[in-house]
Image (cartoon, rainbow, N blue to C red; front, top):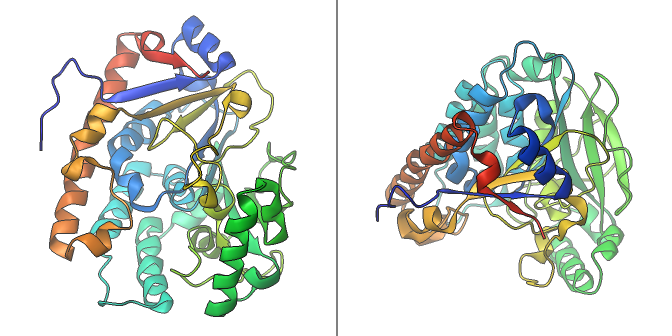
Length: 362
């Protein structure tokens, strides 16, 4: 693995206008953080594992804090936020990382049932013996989980019908992102302790449902249920239909986080934001600054990514490119390297140099 010279930053920091002014005035302070988003991305979460450990286990652990800090995620982002909302978030991350790297073993051509069973076990390991209760009872952190509920053909788990729905959604999305509402609607499962700050979302058809003990595990599984890869999930008491990966609609959460005087702190795999799953191959469909006025995004730098095995962030294609042993070696090496991200942010905060490192989100 090529070494990065110590003067080369491992982090990229971007801030919208309000966040930029706040950080320039006060630096980065935990008490200023109101919201933390978590993006979809599967194995990509391993690339920022060290950053998550520093933020979850140190920076955000303020015993004197009493007001809510809202966590919102889709797919693996919701799993990360579920780690943060547990009593020992670093232990939860460790369980989740280990399960994701070492417990994912598949037959040569796994079907959706096999993939679902494997990732369900990984989720159970991440949650541990009491994670569900800890998440729902947390005195400060309020978890919100996004799923995409199928409509029309997307409400079927029949492979041919679902495949046709995906093709239609991809086609109409090239014309307008709003057209996705014909195939899917957004469902936001919210913590019942206090109001949700996301009730104003109207860019796509959206429903809000209370997150209870009976459904939390199913909701987290559904939020990562990639169509054609995993089985969709039916959730009792939630909007009827099959719930799919929240990233179908909200891949990197290009959403209006609402007004407020505090920060939206966004640890992310990239320094750019792709609105929806179908936008990945549409280079013109990238988020602009409109929704990110309060956002401070912290992401790996290009130099850091270049230092990783293969010069890239892990992704689902690694299952096809490498055997289990090599994939696990690369993913573990990426997770180990990600400690540099946490170390660098810790140093920037300790030396009050965050403002010097931040770029304005144009």
